[in-house]
Amino acid sequence: MRDHDVPYGVTESATHVVAELTANAATHGRVAGRSFRLALRAGQGVLRIEVTDTRGEDLPRVRPACPEGDSGRGLLLVETLADRWGVGLGPVPRKTVWAELDLPHP
Image 1 (cartoon, rainbow, N blue to C red):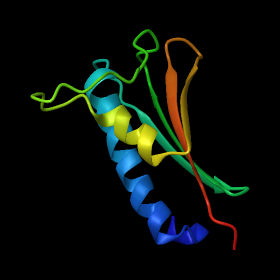
Image 2: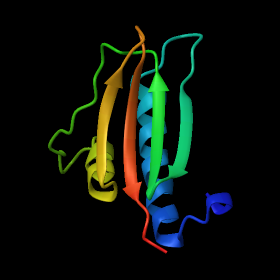
Image 3: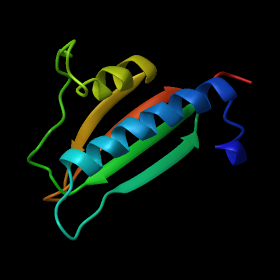
């Protein structure tokens, strides 16, 4: 992100979003013998984070957090930190969970 002059505040948010999306992919999107792919793209005023795994049938969704639970807040954090996020399907059996953070105008 430093190569693209991404500002510190956006870098901090992006770090948390990457951590949550990759943890979800490793925990919920893993299939034996297959891993996930992480892509970061900066351009046209947006930093886009994409995490692709091979569990296209298991779509992420924001759930109410259980106060006593140790997990289940990842997508709430992504929703709070990112300006937009969503899921793209395909090709089968893949899905890509993406999040975008707007970059400040210079």
